[in-house]
Amino acid sequence: MVFYAKEKPVNPKLKEWFSWRATAVTDHQIRDLTNKLADEIVMRGRFLTCLHLDKQPVRVENGQAQLEPGTKISAYTLKSDNGEHFLPLFTDAEEFAKWQTAKDPEATDVVIGFDDTVRLLHTFKLFGFVVNPFSDNYAQTTRTADAWEEAKVTALKMAQKKLNEMKKEEQNK
Image (cartoon, rainbow, N blue to C red; front, side, top):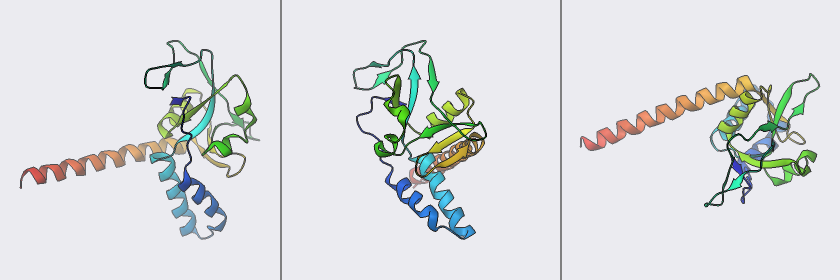
């Protein structure tokens, strides 16, 4: 989680794939696009969102910020018509600016990746997350996020195993 990020996320691949959603009509196209979106969100996605902190983060030497011990955090959420709460995630500053909460002086904007997203979903017992809720409105449940996280861990373990095997083969030459 990055507070006071100088570089805001841009996520050009996500923006491109969101624009394709209206043209995906066959089951194969929809499945392919869903897999691309999931992969990008999980592996490379960086998002803007807002948190409420009872103490502001302290800037440290490298320009980053860290929370003081005991800082209380709460999430700003969006509520569905069914009463379910979602963590809003924004692909870039333009999308983020559409959210009135982002202008709240009590809100602290943060840049988060997928791992932080999953932690926040569980910490605040949210139903899920929604990417660009005021345009693309791409929502996924916490259950789906958990499955994606499990798949990520498995994929990383398999990649590490393959890398280790390749190193071992190289050493045996």
